[in-house]
Length: 497
Image 1 (cartoon, helix red, strand yellow):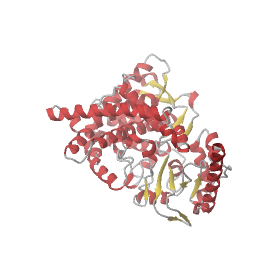
Image 2 (cartoon, rainbow, N blue to C red):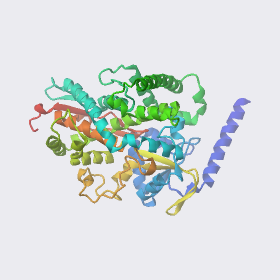
Image 3 (cartoon, helix red, strand yellow):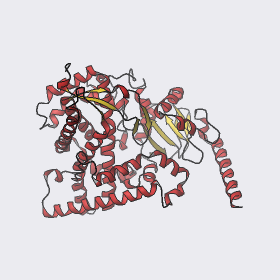
Image 4 (cartoon, rainbow, N blue to C red):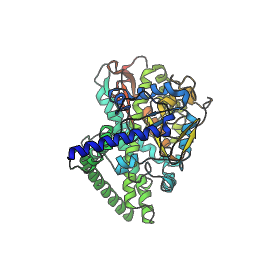
């Protein structure tokens, strides 16, 4: 009896969804050929490189300005993929019409109401509060920290390659991820993860487990189909909850320790200028509750290390692909940076070609392949009206490779980001666009610049011949399989340098 009722419910639900889809205004939006019940899901289940799949469809429908993807009946969607930069700028510049979805809050509960998930006045107030901490004037306090951890990275790589005649093959992201975690931990909360030297640090392991949970698209997809699994006493959700409790314990201890240091007047100069100090002082004025401090802790620790750790291997990829340009970047660094132990902001500002090289790498190998919003009202794009509640997505890779904003968009040309070029403002969506754009843009670019200058002052980077092929997939951040591996050699071992 129960099986019959359940089967009747499923059949009725499927019929309802198909009637709903048939009557939807989104029928006017073109789409790839779909399967019956599974819709576009089989394409993604079979694709090794989902970025190529999405951009391939984008090329097919680019004259129409958009297309839709409906992954599986019963899940969220369909998703409208916008293919014109003018449409994307409209969406990202109107936050009261096109809002953040509940996607982050549903799947990343530790972000709570932090800056990545907050909307409306909550977001505006937080962004205003954190603006000083991410201003260029504040960067002078962060550069010594970037420098310290980049030097430690070089020491570790040096120990691995010094006895190898032809250098050593390294999975760059593994080491860079530890470096960026140590840097953001110290800068944001005065907390020493020490993950470069101690890979078994419990706090670092907890945070990495939580970050992996954030990036676990398969589990999130299953939960979107079977939401009751959130309440099951086993499975990935319970692991996420366990690590969440452990992380909150760590943050609570950090907050208590810092509150005591503030009361005792024993803060270091770095601690006086970090995010945690600013938040605790604001809390004591009654404006920043402890829960928001915890939400912000996970938000900045995740966003502040994962995105940079994803981006830097992309920069190394293009340095290895273009050895002449690698030499040009290195020459500029050697000309402008004399004392690597005492780097100042004005020194980094002289590295204009290095900056252009990094931005061009981010254009083609950015950490966020897709970015989305939800429409609160019906809105017309060209000849197509999108109904209220539609999920709208920006395919950053396709836009950045297109000819609409970038001449010879598929070619790697760092000069396009030099001041002398005619590149239009607001064409690079790597850091978002509009009021919700990345507040840590300058922070990330400076950390990347410091890291690259230390690497190129010490090593030559080349692509490992066995790892020239890789697939790209859209998770929360860009996922590359297999992880990029590079041959890292001491400059003294490389006669051409």
